[in-house]
Amino acid sequence: MKTIRIFSLILATCGAAILPKYSSNAEDSRRRDGIAWEEIERLVAQGAVKESKLLSHDTSDPYKDLPEDGAVLVGFEFIMTPFKKSASTVRGIRAIFLTKHGEIKGAQHGAEKGKPTDVNIVARQGYAVGKVTGQFDGVAIRRLRIHFERIDGVKLDPEDAYDSSWFGIYDRKLTTEATIDTGDHVPVGIAGRSGWGLDGLKLVFVEQ
Image (tube, rainbow, N blue to C red; front, side, top):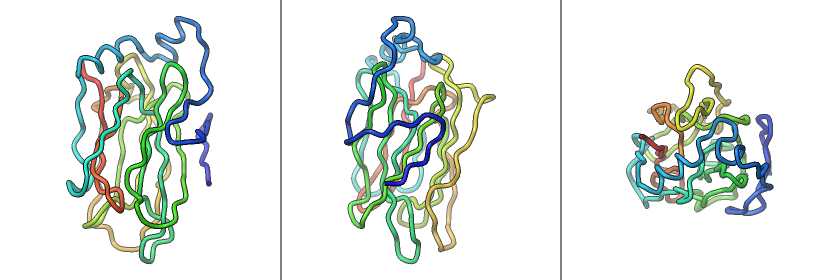
């Protein structure tokens, strides 16, 4: 497994394993790194969440990962496989969430065929996923790039942000590049469509 580290990165040993916990200090648990945990939990419980537009295609089977106790989307595990003449394309995805107790991973979506290589990317401490830019052909997503923004309560600060590198290599001329975003709201899940590959991706976020 190849791992890309962006500041602190901890790998889970399985898809939904809980990683080492952070401080149990009450104030840290409530609003560690600027995160308004109680408010996020309340909004998720009330169903005060929205989905971004869909990146790529509205085909194959739907999926949705939304931790019911409230969590913040801080990164992804990309499942990379060769595709036709391309040595490594994004074929599947797992969300990486930060909870009050540590990091957890969601279920795998896509990559039903091929020998996968997993590549993890996690935000710097205090940041979350604000935007995702993807390149895709007429079938599915092939390459992705993540835009991280600093967390401020239940919002994100677009003035304090940075981008990852591109993940995936594709030797065909891509037909479309598009970006999905949370509108500077804290992301709490993902949704989309998947089958043999990652056909579509949405960001799920809280909104007051």
